[in-house]
Length: 333
Image 1 (cartoon, one colour):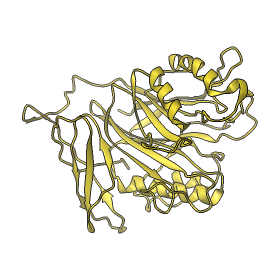
Image 2 (tube, one colour):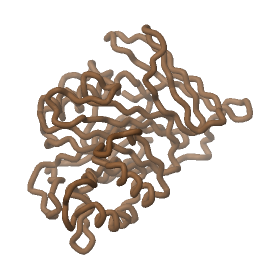
Image 3 (cartoon, one colour):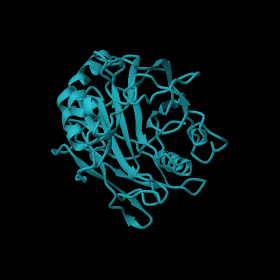
Image 4 (cartoon, helix red, strand yellow):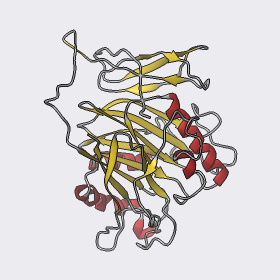
């Protein structure tokens, strides 16, 4: 099932507006940031399972007329997605400290210029450095303001893609406010962005789960519930550091596990194939642990062209203590 959104859009002079939606309790204050001169109002519709669902049908206006994308402007077939646990910059990593690693990072993005890059563990000063490196990208997901130690889950996307809306929430009983699950060591969070290029739409989800299996399962359910409440007509790619192997119990929450009807028919598959190689190597270059960094996707409208673990280094120096994971997709005819 594809992810969908219902709103009327009108041009505004400001570049950033706030999306507000109505519920039975009245006007919600929970913000969604919308870019590219978009203003929207979302209306609730009921669902058979009693959950709130939202649909967004957007319209563009150009000189007072509805604009439809011409078939003459077809996008390229392929797009790529990368996930990388960046390793937080405040860590005392000696020769692998951020001040050294940031100097070699441009090589990674020159070699693998992904359309979307999902970073985890991004400190504020690392975010500033990434902006200086990724000048052809925009970003979404940085918490502002945030404590000095905060680690954001950020999605960078190439400027040829338009951001329709995004949502940031916490993997806790109170997702709309900074918080953590009771059994979680750290506050865990998720960033969702819905993007458009020509007539194609893509939903990207970037997250970083806890170590505790029960928290992983509950966090996975929160993510799936959020996605099912934002019913969309786009393909979806879910990426991040899941702190468990792909055959872990909470993997089944994303990939059906008998709960297809509960989450509105959204079912993910792994972009990587067996045997799943390890991704955490602790700056050693040798990953003896499980594949804990995943890229998952819904396959109704996209299919995998290639997927890989990037084990590159620059004169023995690695980009992070995790290997980047890269997947290339193409749109189905």
